[in-house]
Length: 334
Image (cartoon, rainbow, N blue to C red; front, side, top):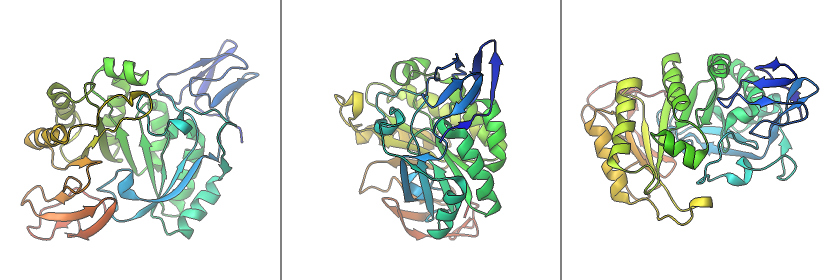
């Protein structure tokens, strides 16, 4: 379904989209970079409103969000399109797809909220592809979800504009931002994007009080050096907050980077240590089974307070937001 977009203005006979940091100038009859917005005779239309390519009930830990209602489930919805062109995209079959090339189903905001309630999900997550690709839909859905006390989640590349975040933030409860690397060179070469807007989004979300977690996929020879890790950790410590959970995840060869090896586990372990040594309170290692890299420990006494097996919470010793052993406050929403 198409619906008139929001956050755009006319520039002569063209339209300036203001949803993401590309700020595309779109001439009549043409689409923006994402292929999901088209100028039709002086009006900008979202072409994929309510068009869901992926629907699932997921553990909230899959987002990954480890400090936001752990053990709960989230109705997870994705559509088509992206404003990045990541060479390592895990969901390229939908993120790089055009409408009509991949089956979709219409799930309007009212239906999404109904499904979340039916399946007893504590939240709705817009994920699998970049959620700003159907910004109007997620905003409409988030407003309805809030009225029903259903929490809302963005799993995002962080490339939204300040204008988009200002509109969305009153209705967005949590976000996991994929901070892909710490250089413009990395973003340009692997994602066809820029770094600084992502950093600004992360800082803004934190300042706005949105529950925030940050994920960094460590790709061999691209963003896994000590300098890369140090830059990322310094940014988190100095400009965001040591209480924000940080996830280092293991890369596996895929899509246009299928010639690379998987990330060395020792590299992930070293990144984890560097982040902890710098003062980060909650650091995780993902995509590495049979380790304790996804468990939560009390940053004060070191007690294992949330034990996970994959995406399943095995035990939870957080009581009223505090460590059950030493009573220290844990930065977590339960």
